[in-house]
Length: 114
Image (cartoon, rainbow, N blue to C red; front, top):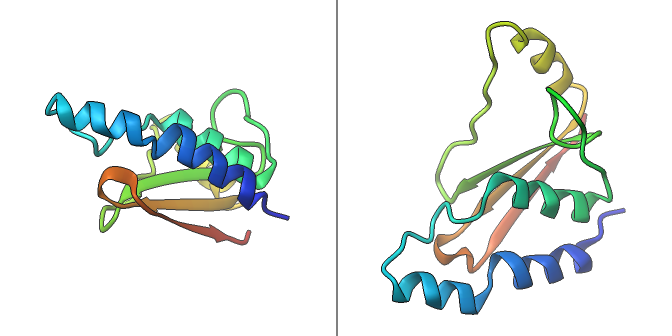
């Protein structure tokens, strides 16, 4: 069962923070991309109840987390020596796609089954 309330609370406090948005705009700083990947992974962990995974492979034990600006592409990186193993693992976990709007005002979540 997804923990939508907990994830929403985290989102409004740490990602769509009105105070942070004001500060970024007030200093003419780029807002898009201001949320590091690990914060999206934490959002996904809170939403799914999953835990982080050490080492190479999926971000969480049972989920791969991808985020992109609305209309942007989701990037998967496969490296020369471990790419085949990571591709196989990515196909065996649920993939959670997060699309966010300018200024992070809204977010769309897509969670694909294995």
